[in-house]
Length: 416
Image 1 (cartoon, rainbow, N blue to C red):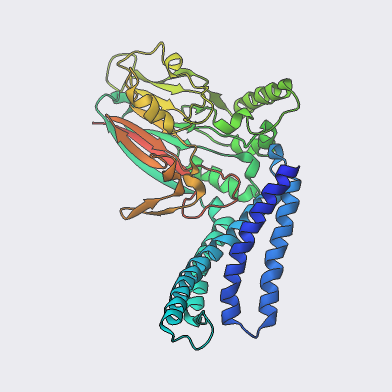
Image 2 (image 1 turned 180 degrees about the vertical axis):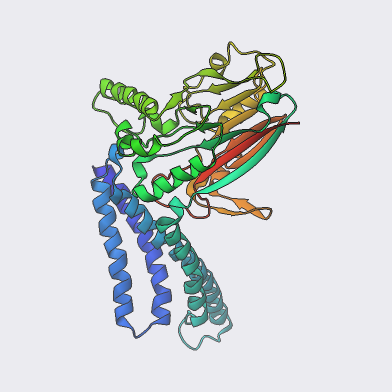
């Protein structure tokens, strides 16, 4: 408890410093409006008290709506104030330099520091509204602003029967974070509208516990694909981020999670593979062709590595066309792209694009996720092998998305 209180104290001291600097802009622009100053500090102190309450009652195994609300309030409050801090701190450097110059030259007739310029405070406050409105949109609308992203990939070795084969990929559902059934079901309907041959889910069904998915089973059971639905596990699915009352309780949770995949109609692949088969083309003799779908358990650099690719692909022909489902994109760089067998396409998720970033096609694509993952969102190609990183269907911790929207990916495979 003492260490928790110390961390809370340090965090609040840092936030208070940001608050004090930000307050200077309000004091400069509204020197006589006492009600504005009181409102500013009332809002800030309310966030401090709410932060203490949430941290003292926090249960990682059951992330409450209060935790999400706190993250939203902190981000809404701190990011705009950081912009104000940059402006005012820069101005203070100039003010101190000016004060030193006048003191040394003997021209300082008044106070050491010149007064703050009203224009600087105005500019800081105006610019700080941009992230504030963006974050507010992300919390209220962005987290359910589903978008469909289409890719067409051409392969020399794709069986002719699979020319035009379509895959809908979803990832990172994080069902424990959902709070709006109507908007969620809009996203599910959008997946079904793509009418793909298969639906592939690349991990993180829950935040920590299988029971988080219980309220949403009927909704996700509506997903349909002519050739089936397949899934794998992500790092959050193992329940490693909470303290369980016993080893048996954790094992029971995993067994329930396996059952839920089955109830949803998903074939869960745990270091194994299945063949997706199509009959021969009309007028062509033969039994048709197949492609190999491989699913590994979570394998991530810096995370638990339950995945076993050699085991999952042990019985496969070197000449077959292969699609791999692997939750963490770091697996591609660390093992997949140099694997002894050719894996033409790997599907991953995990990063969420940090749920924050800027994407303008052909101009800019950036997220803090790029600092941790070189391949953090979208399509990549190396050594003739493709990787697609889905930005995620749900959200975690921060209950919003800013610039990185929830994604439904449709990949069409074509014969070159």
